[in-house]
Image 1: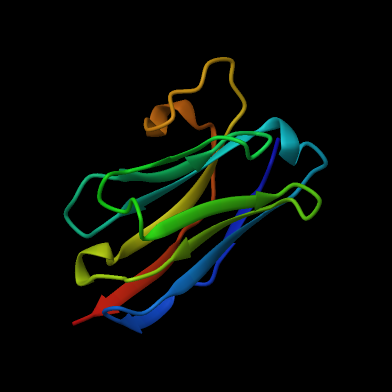
Image 2: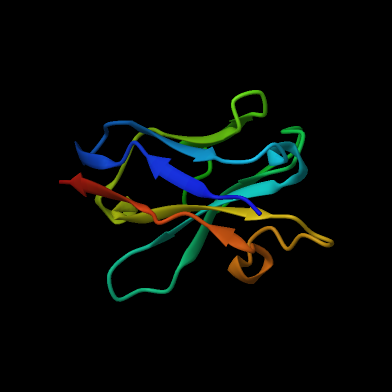
Amino acid sequence: QVQLVESGGGLVQAGGSLRLSCATSGRTFATYNMGWFRQAPGKEREFVAAISKSGTSTYYADSVKGRFTISRDNAKNTVYLQMNSLKPEDTAVYSCAADSGPGWYVGSHRSYGYWGQGTQVTVSS
C-alpha cells in the first residue's frame, strides 16, 4: 500500500507557474505508474498527466500539452507536475494517484487505486 501527499498548490496569476509535488510512502514507489488528475467545482474529475514506472513514458491531456511537464524521482519517492503558462481554466483541486496494474488505463481515474488528498490551484485572470 502507498500513501500520497500533494503539496505546492496556491494562488497564481495567469501566465505564472507552479510546481506540484506528490510524496509517497513505502519502498515500492518505482512499481507504480503515477498520474495527476484535477477537478474543478461542478465538473467531473479529469486526467491531466501520467508517467510510467521508470519515467520513460509520459502522457498529457490535450489541454495541458506543451505547458505542463510530469516527472518523477524514484530515489525520492516523489512525482512532480511543473505547470507553466497557467490559465484561469486550470483552476482546480489537483490530485496525484498511483496505479499498480496489471493493465494501466492512463487517462482513466478508475485505473488508479491510491489517491492523495489533493491540493488547490487557483489561477487569477
